[in-house]
Image (cartoon, rainbow, N blue to C red; front, side, top):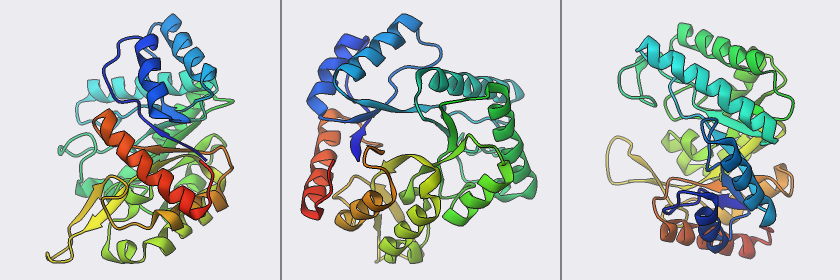
Length: 280
């Protein structure tokens, strides 16, 4: 697998980004540009990545296309289409967003409306609209699973893929986001294996992080954390990924804030990979 993440640090141009990238040791990264970045700069970032044999694995959207503000929702939809078009033009396989919420708790918030039938139908229609507008040939549009938003489990993701019924709708794997109950946490290896077994043929990118459950508090408190700071068995997880995904599949660390935090997470996963006999 190609282990990497987001290049964290201060940079304003491809040259400064390259200096940090080389220090990371990453083999895959999230795009440091968007559809609104000047095209010459986009090309320069891509040239840097190619020079160092680093895969730009994801173009992110990260906007709420169901925003209660119609203007913001329209802008988010336009941005999603632009990001997918950019990913397709550059040959970046994964353009990723979350489904969206009509609630007022924030762009990625937990809200009862997230599970309404009307919302599900909107998700299906919005993904179709994006794909039908762009007609990608090389990129896939994907939705990152969320603990409180469709898709929140492998079976739900498979059903969504069937209902969207578009060949370029792929899967984004974030198993920690789907570890949203004690059962899934306590039986994590089995659950993660199920996720990859069912979604493996559709997965275009994977996020890697750890999970912690406070066993002294009632009811349930689950917390995302960096690899090595929770209780997930990364030797087993990396073997699962290696079993179900191609050898060059991108696996990205996320949600650290600094270079040193990413470095520590990378080292923890690299050590687990070496122990498990999995190449990164």
